[in-house]
Image (tube, rainbow over all chains, first blue to last red; front, side):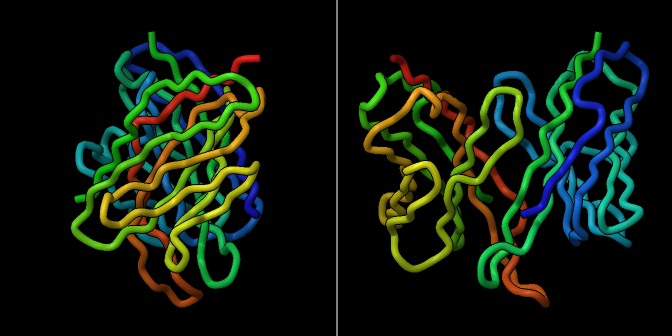
Length: 117
Length: 120
């Protein structure tokens, strides 16, 4: 299985500032995903990040607000820009990892709990 | 577009009782179905998945789920729960597409989550 770590694990930020979240995987993976989990809500996909190409954003999410980098096959960052209290959420990184047989499975990081004041 | 509905936001049960967490989905194409568990302050862990074949899928920790295409459901069950099963459970659907190394799942669409609380 893939082991995923995220930094920071939690942070409290002031509105108008930006925070960069790091996602590190212990093995090389092609596809990485960033999800948001707002308080009391389910997970919503922000974007898909493949190494060597621009991230693909889901409806309602834009690059200016959530720029993503994917410099290599084991690392990605998500920046939450110009934060407002509505950005208070848990942000999770996930990766696709070769599971049993020919199928892939998605593994999730522990998440970054962000509070914007 | 795909969507997932988890019919119960909270399910309280007593230890050693059976439990069923309900999940219904809608999609215009064939889907692949998953259940994930999220323990407090942790990431998501895959419990089980349905890709094809037998409609009864067994997962980790004694959980199982049954795919019912006609009812578009994928309910999660466990015959006897433990205190340690207290967590939030998410049902999810995904496209699947082939890649060079094998079949790969696309993005996951999650349900709203069901909080299972097991009481002693």
